[in-house]
Length: 451
Image (tube, rainbow, N blue to C red; front, side):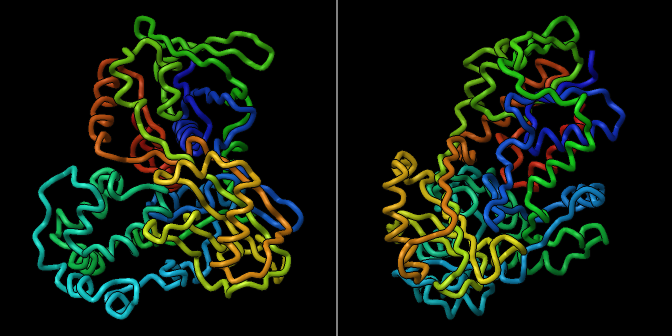
């Protein structure tokens, strides 16, 4: 018998287990893979340090700050350089800096003259009343088409690899949604929030971009060290949960093909929505389908490193490419400009993204076809002659990013109903509460509190 069994040892599961341990609970953490960390994996190779999973996070809540404070002896947060404040957007084959304020928004070539007047008048428009309005509809209504195409669309490409015509702000961007609902305006709400008093604790929530010294895997390693090997069960195949009287039986097969069963009063799931049907077979398929139907987009990532960089000046976070530009890339992150020791001196490291919701065809391309695209696109937009990288890795994320679309409300409601029906079962993971690293860390604490 264990107090709690946690399913999935990604960042959410590891953080959940960390907080359970702090509360003195006897837990087991099950993971079907042969290592912890989920998609997080940092690789050091030939003078480069790159990520196979998320490249960075945002200091978006106090839970992130506190976690790194508690793990300070084992790992150290690395805040991105000031270059992170500058972000490029491609227009007509040329990089333009995304405006960082109202004055820059009026002078930028990214937006039409008509929409610049719309931006000035944005604070005077009434708030929307449709909670399921798409992001595209919301932005067109308040800011105009060019602002949608060259500010919001590239932002959504960078965060969700998604489509503003399908994402619903109430679920996908709740803080943006609340700005309009609470203050009646994006601009007015942002200004008012700047003047709100903050506690010393909240001043630490800087919204800065962060990674971890030595790679994000260092955070996972630190959590693993804290948890101890005897609490973590790797290579746990065919995990199945079964309610029995007032407890649950959790069974799986280990790497020696032995069947193991634990009994527990509490189950916390942090696995992907698409895995729930096999793990929770006692829940009606029709009911569970409202969760498992969650749309995950496929993303193809290419890591490229140069020991000597002779292209454009890398003085920004990176560059994003709006869908209206009709290119085969979603964007390029300048990783060696953001964080230290990511490439040899005078070199450069990039993460290039392709595919996403609107270009699923890209994900299906063979490696040699991907290379042909990069030879053309990367050399053009990055102003480099000849595509001859010293490091080249293609990473395919088949379940990359969940899309918080119009069906999200029904998904959240179904989760609540299932948790009421089966006391002791808690369903978490990136199918709810946001997709970023900060969201995962924050949810891990809340999941531990829920049991």
